[in-house]
Length: 309
Length: 274
Image 1 (cartoon, rainbow over the protein chains, first blue to last red):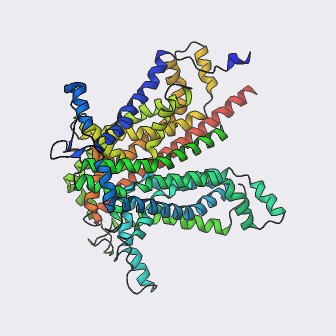
Image 2 (tube, each protein chain N blue to C red):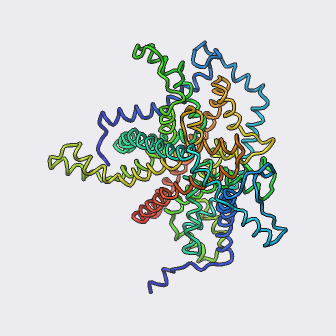
Image 3 (cartoon, one colour):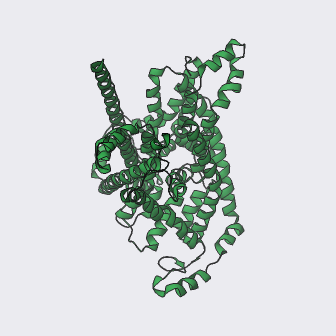
């Protein structure tokens, strides 16, 4: 009898297929197809033309025309990326800056998420709201707000000078320190939210049991709280690390000329040098670097969803 | 976790929230600064707000941004809600993992890649760039956020109400509008608001996909910020922050009221039964 109630496959009508088709086709056109075009243009050469690359496909010439174009493809741009050390230095320093920032975000975010999970039930919605609210305010504005604080004659230096902690202004703007602060500040909610979710579910009686058995609080934290909150830590770190690698606004506004990040390099290559093929090649490599963490992240999310479901 | 907070917890919360809010508070305070020097306090003044009203370029950019945000958020909400329904309800179908991958990937994809790839698509289609291309680009990445928000609402959904309607002969489309939509409405509204603010904020994707005559507000702010910090920008930012904050707070109050109403109705219904 039971199989009557559990249809393995809902019967799909024409309307059902149409429902799938609308978002599917949209994403195929506006998400997947553009990547194929980026890949294609990364194999082209820059040219003084509109659009500024050759070859371009001309469908009017039929298959022969397309084949001619394909035979003109070359991996020259990729070779170029390995020859000029600007690019691999940018990739490397993006990954390093993103990793350091992620670690800093975790160190600052963990006590916040922990404090939220330990606060009285009635206060939690308000605290949650307070973490989410900055996420709704413009990213650009939040980065901009730091310029006035970190400048040489900025508010932080004024405060430190008045208090007599320093004798001359600290140089923070246009350094990597400013970039770290910018990334930590902008991405903090992304880490706190999943971490809070996993800490909130933690069973308090485990900690009580540990305490009753004479386990000191720091050891209970290390042996119980931290391992159980690990899914939240991992999800939060991915959510900070992946977008931070390709970040443009923060290194551009807060970082200096010495701050190399690949998002900025791509932007300069595209808007200042107008070299579309090379910027496409830069994007393809960046995507390849990010595919590993993105896939790991999705697997982890799926595992978590299955455990809950 | 049920145990009460310690001093360490309270200190870390206060420090953490100060870190999150102090920069924005300072930005708001200095938008009322009389002095042109942003970091020297010269007395209270609202003159920078008055000078905003004279700045036609900025007002134009604001108008373009609002229109793009409104149209793209609405379109993204429709597409994203359908996508969420497909993810939760459609079971297995060919290419399902590609579909869910395409929904989740834009959430973490660097904006420079999304912007570049969409621009190259519009160039390949020989589509003249401007208002519509920015709108299409924003719709695409915002619909993925809407899908995730609505999906979380659909997961905790009691399917038996829908099945009851369908058993009683209600056509699927009518069931959706009479039963499913009202229940997932808070998620749909939150999705629309998220899509709207994402579009309002976006600098990178808009910079890639825009064309002549469609400069958005973030692009305008960005080009001025590069020249230096000015009280006018502080004033623009303050207005934006105030609008978004009011919107979010109003929405959360409305959701809360709806929830209390629902609880009261349920209690009344059970009371009547007993």
